[in-house]
Amino acid sequence: MAPRPAAKPESETRADLSDSTPGVGVHTRRPEHQLPPDAAIPQAANIQAARDVIRSTEDPTPLLHSRPLSRRYRRDVFLKLESLSPVRSFKHRGALAAVPSIVAEHGPTGLYTASTGNHGQGVAYAGSRADLAVTVCSPLNTLTDKIEAMRNLGATVTVIGANLSEAQTAAREMADIAGGVYMEDGEDPELMAGASSVVGEVLEAQPDIESIIIPVGGGNLIAGSLLVGQMVDASINMIGVQSVAAPAATMSWLAGRVIEHACATSAGGLATERPGFLAHSVMDRFLRTMVLVEEADLARAIALGFRETGCIMEGAAAATLAALEAHPEDLGSGSIALVVTGSWLAADELASALRLAGSELRRNEHG
Image (cartoon, rainbow, N blue to C red; front, side, top):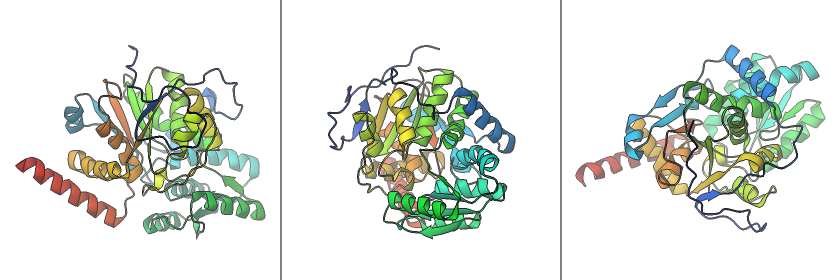
């Protein structure tokens, strides 16, 4: 496979270790491959074992070649539709991989986690299959539809905390009191190994793919994707994307240390105040490119995705398309896959996107 073209750099070295917010755009740096190994990072055997567990219970989600987007960007564009999974996101993958080990170590214990919706649904889905009780702490701004979805999957949902960090603290305390197991997205190596199966399926279906864009919240998905990339072909250009309204993972990656930062994004899947420490460790070693987009870019990408493909993308999922739309010349030139991580949109968000899609279509027809 030929070497991948490098993205156009806007930042090429570590930040000055200040906590200043990086600007909108493409950020690159050289990964720190020489860092010592971390025993907690999933190894090839762990990733393969997770892949085998998921393959034994779940069909692969579709990898769609989009002709309209391929024409638009003059390159082959593929959509990895995690929005068509049993929980309408990729989050069940990590939980399916983690639950068997939890049961083997702790027996039929209760599971506790914190989530803005998708991760909680994933844990609830896997827990219900293993007859385990699941409790999810969700911050106050969690979509009502996602709360109901978690409850419909059997979880007990407690709405607590102004943000995800506060909900995580509450869930951890509940687990300690009850003697259950706390699962934190971005800190659990088996959750990471399970999440890696998303890009694993992309590379199985399309082994010549050159770049993959991945939304980043706590960092579990991008970290798992980077690990699979190292196993298959380290030259594949894994690109992370965040909203500038929730830039903590980008700031941490640029600075080389975990940084907490206020989060104001409307996209639940991107809404974290810091990356997971384990996820950050992997990003620090292997990630070359991150993109920060505006909140308005997410709204336009939801509309663009629906108009061009018919797919409903939640804000975090649309971030991948937003990155490509904003920087089509800066993210390589060969085939590219966009990981569509979920389809959970509030009714008013979907209606707004549809109106935007309609108005842009009419403007293009008459312009």
